[in-house]
Image 1: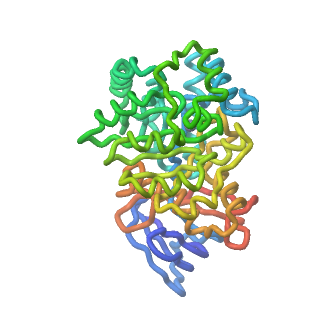
Image 2 (image 1 turned 90 degrees about the horizontal axis):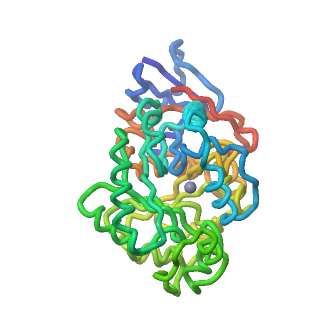
Length: 387
Ligand SMILES: [Zn+2]
């Protein structure tokens, strides 16, 4: 049994508890949460700072970890994608070593669960052995409508290689056909199949959807992709996608760098279980632009945080993402920011029975945050993993 105390405990189940005490068993399961004004129990491990639940990384690509530092910054998304395609041919042992190191670094930085995008099965063994809980999204790509069934069948085969939770998903509006999304919706009926889609990461995506013009057309030409079946949608990619997405699955829109207020309001009209995900360091890396965070004041849908991959980020640290978010959304309270970083991601991944907040019976992991700046996360803030 262990007992932890700090200046404030953020349980995310209620208000932060000043001088709270968390009691856990040896496996980190919470046995008691209390506030004791004057406790002289010598067994209490006392810390300066705040104790928060383990972080949830809602969006990552472990299999791109070997691309750390390999791709130029600020090139824009289309050049970034080309560079990733070009760099993919790396020896398998190097890819595996990079994934292993990234998995360990995430654990040491206080991350307890990850929503991870996979195109291949190469990460399956690492995920099975990891201390981190993974949900793998088997990602499907294919802009040509007549290939949709073939793509789904191939993804199902990849999924069979994973012994940890997984579901089928689609990559991004510019890389999938509407037919593929419709077939995914049909496949998802009656089963648990949470979905992640990269959304409005560059302005060219809406050029394509609204007017069938812009740099993506040349991109398809360069890659010999047939675009005949793609017609003008006359609406944003988010609006076009949401209308064909499954109804009873969690759907995560990732990045949202160019999402407008109209799109945010549009999601209210649908019954879908929409979640948002911000990956600000990846947005700065690729496009050097951040989402219009103020628009998301009007959303009722939960916001989560992801790191994206080491191809587009210098670290896979949720704390580093929170630093950017706090800096650009100064009015956001630490309690709300922690909900983005912990419980909302746990709910999205279906791990909230155990992770994401502190309650008796849960095993969420405990992180100590030190060097806060006036009670909020600042440049100097550090995370220390307690359990
Ligand atoms: Zn991504």
